Length: 177
Image 1: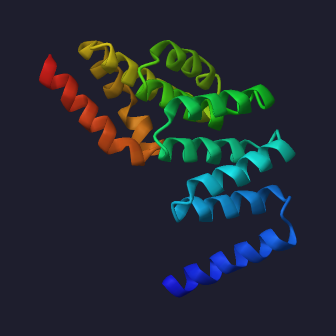
Image 2 (image 1 turned 45 degrees about the vertical axis):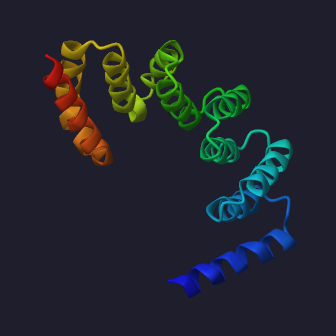
């Protein structure tokens, strides 16, 4: 596995030499740098990529992830806002922003993002689940538990990876009711 990883990284570095301005190459090399903890180098690649490809939402998401690795959630939110200025229709950027806003206690920002997420059938369940997380943050245990219970079937079908978090949230609600 390490051999394959080393070969893959070598291929990415060769691609960066051959096509340093290609958005997918920039994303790949930044991901390699980030993986190895070279966050400043990853950030430099991504900032250059964003300058060259201002509408590429993947570059904004990766740059926000680097900021989060650096424990800079406000910076990550600012990066996502910049991305949303370029791509106001980007639900993946909006979802990431909502999650950051929730984690930093910006519940108003989270609710604003939730209302936009709910306009998409693909993101409706995630928006509803984030809304339940806001209710938890507001200590509205009964409302949060009802919402999570209502969402569980759809959540387990569409996003089973969120099942443990949903059940932990329900347990938190039941504990406080």
